[in-house]
Image (cartoon, rainbow, N blue to C red; front, side, top):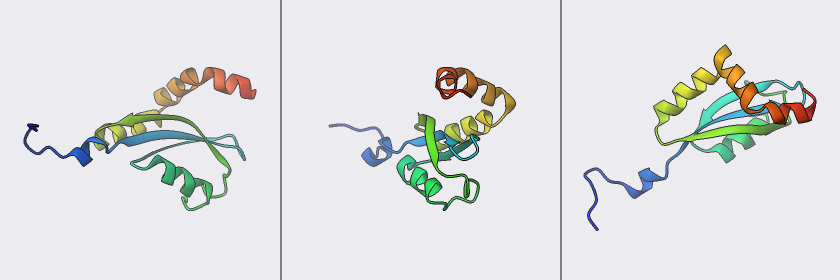
Length: 101
């Protein structure tokens, strides 16, 4: 099999995730970025992430996957703006409606 220059099979499977968590304690949303979503979710719920410490339990309500880390960071930053929060509210409209909030 012929591969392009700088080809690395391991690199193909590295994904970067932008995620949104919802605190059951105060109903606030937290947006973050990671390459290991399961581990990061665990760290959030065990109080090891300062920004969400004391807000547990947290639920994963949304995520997006990216092949490029910079693309993921740009998306995370955008989702933290007013426009991004509005888009999340529209995307998750039924989820929030069913929660009564």
